[in-house]
Length: 375
Image (cartoon, rainbow, N blue to C red; front, top):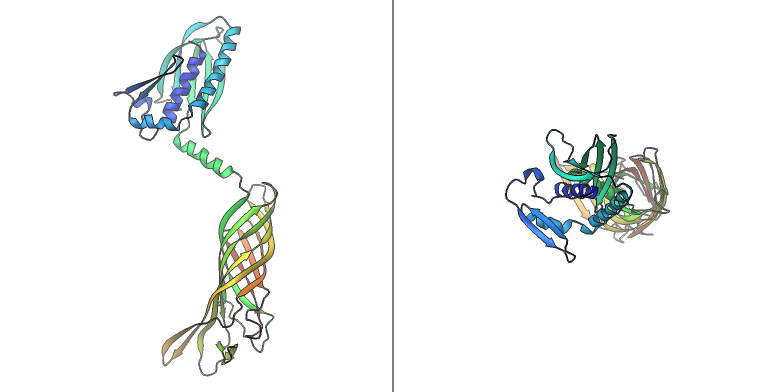
């Protein structure tokens, strides 16, 4: 027997203890009855499997025996070269220890042929990989004619951690993310005689965004292109007791009510938008998100609209909700931009088209601004 027996035993026992299927038993637990399967090869070689249950047999479907044999053949070549140089061999007893727990190790004793008779301490370290996710570290120490081998087999938690890290490290130039815009609306470029002021806190903007972030130029490039879908909800709450109506010619206008005091009078509409925004993202020295800035166009389509009024009548609260398009523009387009640092992002969105259709309502454009969350 040669040193290869030591390494073969270490590898096979490590695979049996560290890569067993769910429900399989370790060496220390295999004290009951066992089933033995002998596989005879065409060249006369035999492979013996010691099984405690059927789950262990099924687990062999997950093992890459081709990879294991390539590792073993490499060590065979090394041992043959070693034997050609050193002919002075002596039988010694070797202890192979599996795991790191010195208080309760699982051990197996074998007899091998070892080299070296000068009593000096020497160490060898071997790194063995089975498949891509399992790494086995073998350390061989020789002292005073004895050899000790420690095999560090990763636990299931450690193997799962390796898989998770490899998955995270896998480079994908395009990534999907969800973010949320929370902000306020305001009218700009309006005719003050036709369009009322808005109540700031009641004129809210909310957008649910499914964005695709495509990195252009490789892993280290700061240049990104942001696209995707945005579902936006605009609220315009009118100040100074204004309400919105339509006349007999189907023209939308705002009127200031003098007989009823409205607690709430607002117009709401929803839309789906598609942005196309170039963006620069820079990393900090610790690898976390740093400064970012981006701006680009967007286009969208209106989905629905309604008005809502709330007022007191004879001591009772009255609510009215009117579903109508109010001659709002079906298509919309404009510019959107983002600036931020770390986890704090600010957005602004400007509708370049009029809120209402031409000659069917007042002249007004909309600007929205606020915080972008989860980006």
